[in-house]
Amino acid sequence: MLKVEILGTGCKKCHQLEANVQEALTTLKLDAEVTQITDPIAIAQRGVMKTPALAINGKVVSKGQVLPPDQIQKLL
Image 1 (cartoon, rainbow, N blue to C red):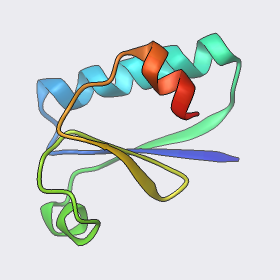
Image 2 (image 1 turned 90 degrees about the vertical axis):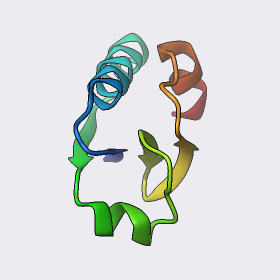
Image 3 (image 1 turned 30 degrees about the vertical axis):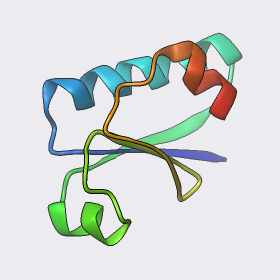
Image 4 (image 1 turned 180 degrees about the vertical axis):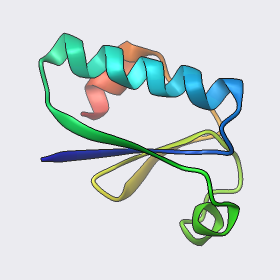
């Protein structure tokens, strides 16, 4: 199963990124486990200094920006 993680402190941008991820998954008809990582230490251990960040299957693919659904679809 596809694993998608939103890395951030739970701010407005983090929630928007999660909504965009859900929209991209729905459009592509993909099933994925979507989780939020809010622990600052866990986020920093992944090399992320700017949030929100997006990780797909354990690989960080975006940092410090809210990707629109169409860009997320390309990454999925």
